[in-house]
Image 1 (cartoon, one colour):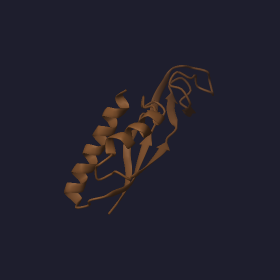
Image 2 (tube, one colour):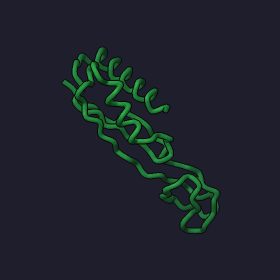
Image 3 (cartoon, one colour):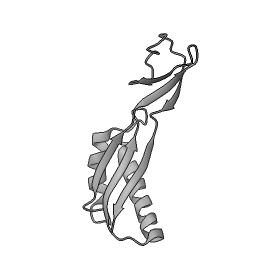
Image 4 (tube, helix red, strand yellow):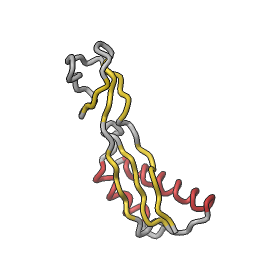
Length: 113
């Protein structure tokens, strides 16, 4: 379950930012996660609660902002939205797509004291 390692990395980032910016408590963490990031959101939520227990983010709320998967179709040059990485272009049915969005996994915003 690599989501636990992701949560540990998030906590490490929070600790580094707390030291750099002088806050001591994290109230909310907003993560932006794309459908092609390879992250299981429910496992990430569980892991976040486990990893942050006893830390500066003990009672922090975790908010997930799910982004859309987007791609550019090489044959018809359309910018499209897709649900799955290997979906065909809805315009021309081609599978020659360049993924342009949906691979994100980043801390979007923090609420701190």
